[in-house]
Length: 89
Image (cartoon, rainbow, N blue to C red; front, side):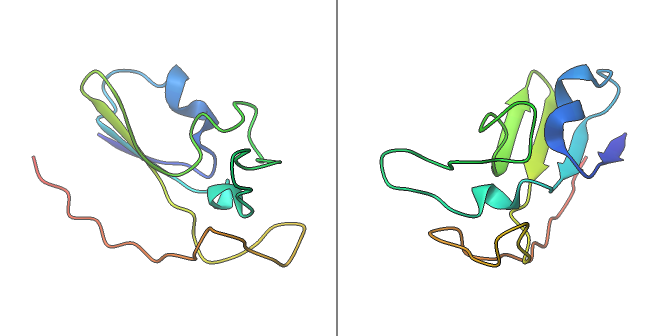
């Protein structure tokens, strides 16, 4: 089963029947400060699921940094991305 969600915050609560979760919302942190990371992430889990692939047992989460911005119309060290994912059994 595949889940598509706006925020990656739901990933820890999903049933194990969900093999792949696709999310965005964090914008990859949008601003990545060297040696600090993202000063603000729109997630209750902070930088835990910032962007990229995360695994928990047989489950996977992919968080895209997307192409837009939130609150501040700026990106720093987080290039916009459009993803093409190939899902295989």
